[in-house]
Structures are given as C-alpha cells and as structure tokens.
Image 1 (cartoon, rainbow, N blue to C red):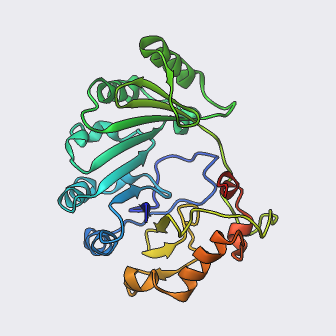
Image 2 (cartoon, helix red, strand yellow; image 1 turned 90 degrees about the vertical axis):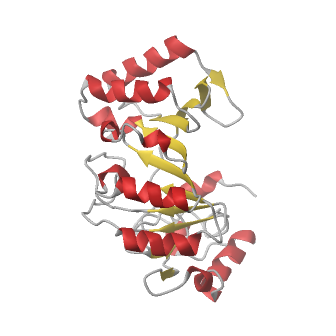
Amino acid sequence: MKRVYLEITDACNLNCPFCTYQKGDSFMSLIDIDHYTDQIRPFCSYLYLHILGEPLLHPQFEEILTLLDRKDFKVQLVTNGTLLNKYPHILEHACLRKLSISLHSISYINVPDAYFITIDKLIEDPKDTTIELRFYETEMISDQLKEYKEKLINKFGIEQTKRKDSFKLKDNVYLYKEELFDWPDISDTVISYEGTCHGGVDMLGINHKGDVTLCCLDPLAYNKLGNLKKDHLSDILSSKTYLNYCEEFRQHKISSELCARCSYRLRFKA
C-alpha cells in the first residue's frame, strides 16, 4: 500500500464551491487514531491527513502529530493554511514529510496579510519538510492570490520539475498548478464501466467514522470495505470484496457505480 488517507475531521472553516460535500462537525478521537494507525502501520508508512475537512481544526492536532512521530509515519498534511499561525513549530515534527497548502481555497475570502506572512516564514526555512503551494487552474483565483503568486515567482523564479504542472521555487518548496476536478457523485451520469484506478491497489481512504474505502474521493463510504471500529485492517485487505475490486481494476473493469461516475480515474492509464 503506497498511502492511506485519514480524515481526522470532516469540519472545515471555509465553504469552497469546488468542495461539493456538506461539512460536518465530527473529530476522530486520539484513542481511535492510535488504534487505526496501529493497524495501518504494518501495511503502509505514508499517511495523508486529508479527505474532507480542515485537519488543523482538530483540538488535539499537536498530540496527533506527536503520536505519528512516535510511530515513524511519513505524513502529508493538506490544509487551507488559515490556521497555520496557531502552529509555529509544526515543521519540527519528524513525521511531517510534506505540507500542502491549498492556496486556491482562499480565492473566495479576503485573508489578512498575516496569512501570507505565516507562509513566507515556512518557505524561508522549510527544514526537512517539502512545502507544496497548490493553485487550482481556475478563473476564480482572486487578485489577492494572483499578486502573491507573482511575488513568489519574481522572488525565486520557477523551474519545471519532472512532475506535471509542478515547479520548483527553491529547495523543498514547490508551486503546483493543480487541475480542478469534480468529486464523483452517485447521481452523476455514468462515464464508463471500463478503465482502471489506483484505488484499493495503491491507496485506501478512512473517513472520520472509521469507514474504510477504496480512495480519498469517497468520503461518504459508498464503496465501504469495513469499519476499523469493529473490523481489523488485515481482515479487510484479505476480504473477497477488497480483492475483487483490485482484480477488476487490473483487468480494466469497473463494477462500482461510484467509480463508474468518477472522472478523476481517467488520469490513470494502464
């Protein structure tokens, strides 16, 4: 398993139009996170704190990172960045491999200068953490954000990397022009029952309820494989349901009605 997405909360402090799901107010308990990550660790060391929700809203966020430090996880944190000023020592956590800041999230609000000052401080000394500044390619990017993007480019210059749409600003700091995508919905029109995906094969999603799904684009657990409150991950990964999904993807077959409506999987080739 290359990575597991863990939704420690479905709460968010923003209302971005590209995020189509209704936000909630649930938080994983530290006890559950400890229990879940004990099950994840034998299969995967790369943990993404990201499905829906803003992870930095979790009231025990520091304790979560300390827990993951101890378990030697490699963590990618995805955040809108509005609460980063509350965690000035976030880069000192050994587990934090990558900090992805979704700057496009602030296109729909006015943020104080302190928002950019906080990011500038992180960029100044990223330590051993990779910092990724994400911009959706959309016409809705605010003038405030455009000006900040230009400021970064003028200050550092940009260098194309081997990764599509990724540009190096300086060591450990990258600008990523992310392509906007539609979240799959069971009410959408079917795209195809043929194709493949990395879901299940290379990744899993675990939502705030503990439901295990094929990927991070299924926060409502339409493709529910089990629940870590009552099922062990090792049993889930040896279940007929899970193995059938993986084999179908290898054979370029889509049986899940949600996956049949997912356009994101079209990015994955044979």
